[in-house]
Image: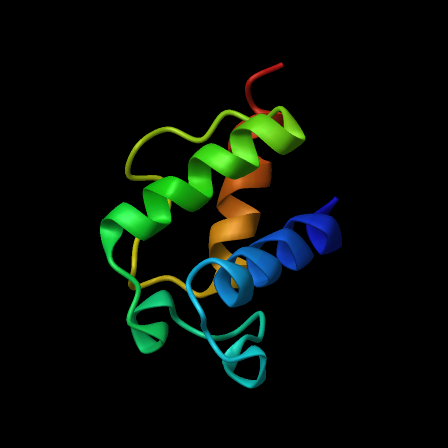
Length: 81
C-alpha cells in the first residue's frame, strides 16, 4: 500500500499542484516543494477517501518528507484496528 499512496501523492502534486515530477521523491520535504498546510490537508482528504484511511489533522506537516508522512499514516491506521 505504501507504493500506491506514494504514487497517488505524486500524481496529485503533478496534476493538481503543478509540481515538477523531477522534484518528487520519497525523501523530499513538503516545504521544499513549497506546499502549504492547506495543500497537505487537501492531499490528506483525498487519501482518506481513496484508500479508506484515517488521517487526523496535523498528522502530516510541511517539515516531513513524503516517506515519513506515509509511514505515519500507515502506522496511525494499523493502531486503529
